[in-house]
Amino acid sequence: MEKQWRIVDVLRHSRHDWLNKIQLIKGNLALNKIERVYEIIDEIIRDMQQETKLTNLKAVQFAEWMMTYNWKTRLISLEYEVLGDECDLSSYDADLTAWSSKFLTLMENQADAHDENHMSISIEVLKEEVKLFFDYSGTIKDKNNIVQWLREHQQQAAIHLESFHIHNHELTVLIKILF
Amino acid sequence: MEKQWRIVDVLRHSRHDWLNKIQLIKGNLALNKIERVYEIIDEIIRDMQQETKLTNLKAVQFAEWMMTYNWKTRLISLEYEVLGDECDLSSYDADLTAWSSKFLTLMENQADAHDENHMSISIEVLKEEVKLFFDYSGTIKDKNNIVQWLREHQQQAAIHLESFHIHNHELTVLIKILF
Image 1: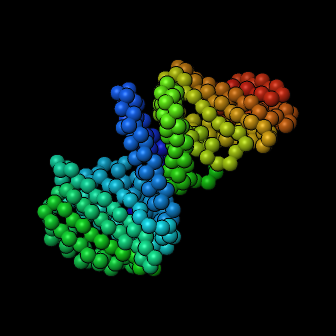
Image 2: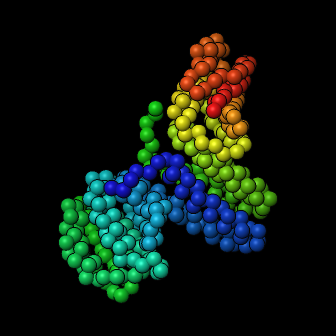
Image 3: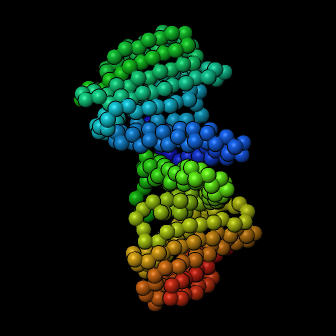
């Protein structure tokens, strides 16, 4: 695992993110763009609800990894959404974190600093399984390397690789956790 | 020391505080109280600057203790301000945290749940010393107990008790760190 965050650093990063949001509200207010201010506020509330949904999945390591991902120097910007009901993923936490962080490390090595690289993770909680859909757009330096890695990591403890599609500048990967 | 916070819990508490602020902005916006929105935003920015100044003192434990104080179930609400220039208090961190957290534990035992109890800590950085001014208002169940504790903790490593004043519902304590 990566180094543990200190509380003061977590609060510093969080403060920095919030300062940007508050400045955005203040700026639009000064321009009398009230509708835009409402939009920004609604986006903020939606993001917070996503964080709450993520935290409620009780995969503590995985949630921490995602919520702090963009605070380190990265080539890929990560965002996520949580769809469906609540469920307790605590017993899959370690496997999920290991698979996802290794996969993102692989993709960071694929990404180019001169490009905009983006990863979106959709977590969908269904009755008898959880689907994780990774949607990457950005540089792909070596397709074969990715294909090889995915084949080697088709089945890792609770994680099952369902499918993947790879293009020049885009990669989608679907994994599942079966209860 | 008290139990270590998990990152997800820090983010949950922080998110909760922020949700309140955002709702306050949204509410005043809906009432078209634009001036009030500006005031709230300015207060938020001022609080953030205080957090930054506190963090910059490099007393990591002490900063963490203060910034997370109100997230636990407490009888006293704590606020702080940092005055003066920056300085490196890292070598006084442990002493400062020990003295202050013991003092606040003492005062939590003095406070009454039916009362509003408040502690304001002003940290003033001067050239050759740092002053910490604790200003408490709230229940004081047993003055003698406080006086005795303060006399026993007049000098603890780098911490020097300068003066204190105790009244029925108010207590002020000035401590210093001499470089």
